[in-house]
Every structure is written in C-alpha cells, then in structure tokens.
Image (cartoon, rainbow, N blue to C red; front, side, top):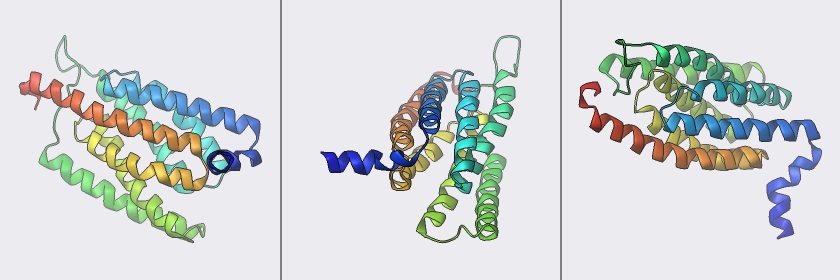
Length: 210
C-alpha cells in the first residue's frame, strides 16, 4: 500500500505547498468547467479560464512547455467561445449545438497539422525533444487544440477529440508525477463520454440545428 502511495504522490514531497494547493484548485475548476460543458452551460468558460490560468503558471514553473501552451490556448479560446456561445441567432436562442460542416473540418485539419509543426519547433528550440514524452505531448496538444476550437464553435464533434486526448493524458500525467491532474483527466474522460451523449440527444431533439 505504501508503495502505491509513494508511486502516486511521492513526487509531491518536492513541491511547495502553495503549488499543490494551486494544482488542486485548478483541478476543481477544471471539473466544474467540464461539467458545465456537458450541461451546455456558458459557465464552462469562466470556470475553465480560472483553471487554465493557474495551470499556465504552474506548468511554466515546471518547464512543461507543451502543457503550458495547451492551457494558454484554452484561455484564449475560452474568451472566443464565451463570445460565440453568448451570440443570439434570434431574439430567443443563442448559438445552438450543431455538427461540423466541410469548411470546419478543413479548418480542424489545418489546426491539427499547424499545431504539430508549431509544438515540434518550440520543443526543438528549447531542447525539450529528449524523450518519447515529447512525441505524445505534441500529439495531445494538437488533439486538444482542435477539440477546444470545436467546443468554442459549439460543435458536437469536440467531445470525440476530448475523449481521445483525455484517455491519453491519464497515464501521461501520472508518468509526469502530477497525480491530481491525472485523476482530473480520468474524470474528464467520463464527463466527455456523457457530454457527447447529452449533446447528441440535444441534436436529435432539435434536428433543425444539425
């Protein structure tokens, strides 16, 4: 039992108490953001912004550039998504849930490829391309960049990207020594699955928005 505890939380012994508290706070607001997203509530963005700004600080301090870029991008896209979700298409209804169209799929592909190249260049520039983790970081960053853009656009396909990225991130963050964040992504995976089902039900009940 002690070996398991040491494996999960042993690395925290080297962290400052403030950093541990900040990570746990970011996890809580991250869960709130994911839950509000599942519920299709605009509160997904302000709660997410609190979580991401904390993670930007922590990840910069811990020199995890790929993870930091993901959260910095989340923060910027949250501002964009907050604006999109609050726009009314008529006097009663705000931007509805919908499926991606051909142009949006092309943009998603462009975001994915551009992100791969950008992260690779950043890692090479800062000499971070030193292990298999860099490869996984690059792929997950690209996946999450597309997922966040689609969520900001209120597209149901965002959940597919979140599910894939979250599943990869669970063991990745555990390996990096951030157990609380790893548990967060495990929770995110479950929320993303239920989020997809909830949004799909919304689309089926409102076929005019498909």
